[in-house]
Image 1: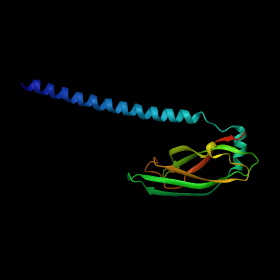
Image 2 (image 1 turned 30 degrees about the vertical axis):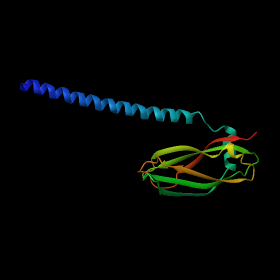
Image 3 (image 1 turned 90 degrees about the vertical axis):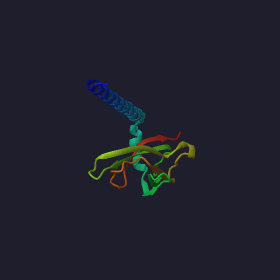
Image 4 (image 1 turned 45 degrees about the vertical axis):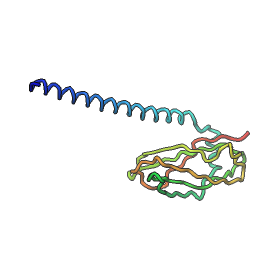
Length: 159
């Protein structure tokens, strides 16, 4: 093989490698984008009604605590526990909380909506208190290690 043919062959191999790497990056990026777009779209459809916004003050969270453990797969599992009390006059069948995690500079780095009252366990009646447990295993490592901001983001009343 002559010198010009070798150089041409090397350039072709390098171009092929670059093309494969770019294809992998584009496919992975598209998959990640679709995951977050689908997840965000689902959350955007659930909003707190004006009636729910007015009632939220009757649903205080108490005894909120957080602990972190390492799972068998050597991943950090953060668990938030606490209690929710219905101090209002209506039964509630579903309550969802948005947990907002920050980095050391107070930038939002992760948010997740999780139910703390579910219909399958019966409604949270006026005067009732119910414990909750929220496990998180996807929090980015640059999290500030503080309790996240917890905001009631969805509320459904029992019939």
